[in-house]
Length: 293
Image (cartoon, rainbow, N blue to C red; front, side):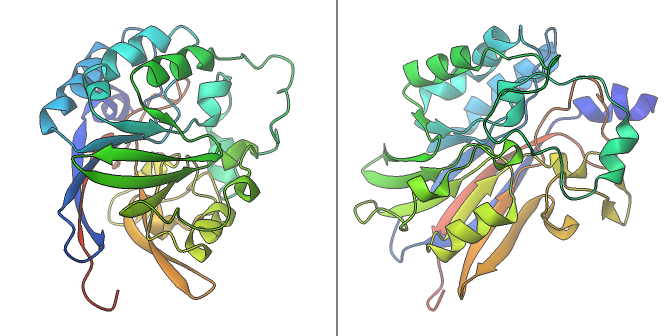
């Protein structure tokens, strides 16, 4: 337990992934995905590491949510991401951006292997749940020019290339409204992708059926507590454990998309441990797809 909390939970890594997904002839794009920061006051090492990621010089940044695990953490999140907000970017929020965590028995997480707590449906939470000041995060990201993809679309212009982005609010608390963005990628951009915090199958099916070639998500923490040589026990949603982190495929209605799930770089403040699943950010290099893909 001391290793999981004292060392591995702060052993930050960078996952590098190549995704052959761009149209033929398009130059490669480097996308930095940050997710599940779960910032708590005083996490200086995490803040410095996030700041250092700007040295990767990505073409753009995607933040897939759950930035907070402390209602006082907004200034520290914005400070940690400040150097990255010098680059074009976009974001969606997760449940922990809206609501603070509560102490709970970790065994409940392991028993509830697939469904997670996803019953808010956009409504007010139960008595005792803390409202996180997500508005401050939104304002900081918006001021930096990052696109808010909350159940909406947007276009990033990156070095003469237009990237179409379609995002959903968090399916884990039933705030996703795919009907508001349905119909497939915009026709103008050179390339389009989908963004969502929690990779619930209904969201992945919708993006894939609509023809998005790539979907980025977070939420799972890579399983957080994994068994060496076996892998994750849970995903905290209805995604199978084989796809709990990293790059995989998703198929729906005859279409196939790439799915990348970040294991994230933080934990719930009440379960500050990781085992066989170090915290991470991901640098995705998007390249031209082979013929026939």
